[in-house]
Image (cartoon, rainbow, N blue to C red; front, side, top):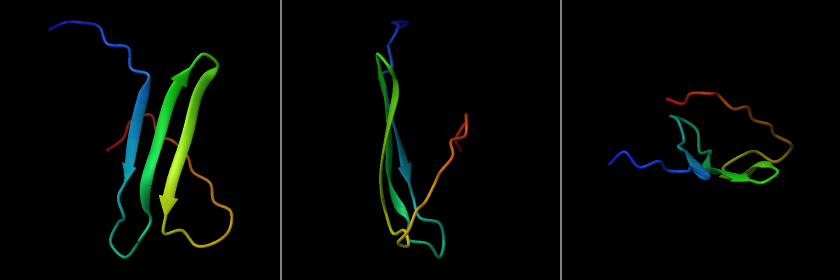
Length: 58
């Protein structure tokens, strides 16, 4: 124990709330030139969407 671990990837799982069907995953991968964010989300209405990121999740 006590070994340092370099975290290079994190995955957020999106669960639908009551009355909604939106779900999916968002993957954050650290690279040489910054962080790559890839979202795979289903259940959205057609059209453009945006999102924001909180520093701490729940």
